[in-house]
Length: 256
Length: 283
Image (cartoon, rainbow over the protein chains, first blue to last red):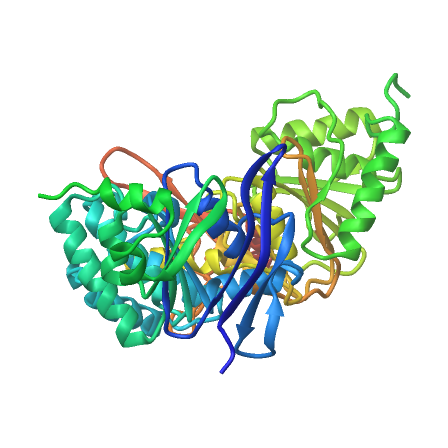
């Protein structure tokens, strides 16, 4: 079995400052990887480099494509990378407004990726959109409403539906539960966990919320100042932190 | 003759526009940037079309100018007078006799023939503009043929209105490659874009873009399999000439709901009426 994603020596600098430096890891099919760290530690930079939104300064990101096997997505031509971005990959933004088209109905938002890969049958697109709204627990009668009339939790669920509709194999999530209150967070996490397990998705989740990675992630990477300071199985890292920063992070969580 | 250079623009400017036109003809549907000049009329009055016309005019040309199909409205009259004065070319109202037709938002009903040039005035050349505000992004989308968004607009139409409600500036795909805004012509005119014998040039003055359809170019209106493209018009016959085929304007007659439908193409309507008069005079 080959890893779905192999990252080798990925580095991104912002002038003299480091975004992230020398990050290497493998992601296996069906695995969920968490990246935690404080703000400014380079988590989002790393995620954006992996998803092709930023061009890294050094390193390789090798993705196991469906059609031609392992390909380096950094040196891949842009049309292919874009195609990957709407078929095999999905990106869930922290703020649903970044990932949704606010002026387009919920159905249109879900259908956009289908139409981008060539779906031209209105009835078919609409049926798929309705099916996906159901899967993310949005009532079918909201299909023609704009996301601006949705609550924050619904917007986030709509964004997830919009991303998963083409059956991606790898999902990038940037703080998917940030900005939601705890009860909505819990439902969203439940939903995500169900979808990830049922569809056999691989995912990379960036978050500063340790509870989220405890629930979702199989493996964990802890970042500080652009460097990976510790990595391992989630429970192992959280229950027996080795690096001083990880210990600080784990001990900072409020117990209710 | 007068103090203007032939057709107002100086020769270097015309040369620059012709180069853009050649490129546009070579890549049908592609928007070629050009250094649009200030013209002695406000933006929105056809500054792009006027510059393209000026660059194409020769002293032998016969010019026709229409505005929404009509030869006698302000925009058409003033542009026609502009070229009469600055170029001294012959003008006509008959579609068949014209060698160069500048149009605002209509294609003449009479089928155009080889050797004719149809110049469109274009307000917003970018078909993706209201879907994607960034110019850098829309250019990339054209380059990568990333046109899924265009169908999102049509999807929204069907979801909201039950049919594709876009009635004008209906997006088309040119030769299977570029998605193009045909300028705000009614979608009734879209089928006339395809396989036309005439050369079709589009000029957008404020946006500084030129694009073109060479003769006999395949132009397909975008649609869905289960909601095919339909050219629509008012469901009436012309009250003056009786034509059931032409595109109609609705004219409000009074404040009691009275209305009449007349051909928007005045030359087509007048020609038909003249023929009817002739044949009724014979009887």
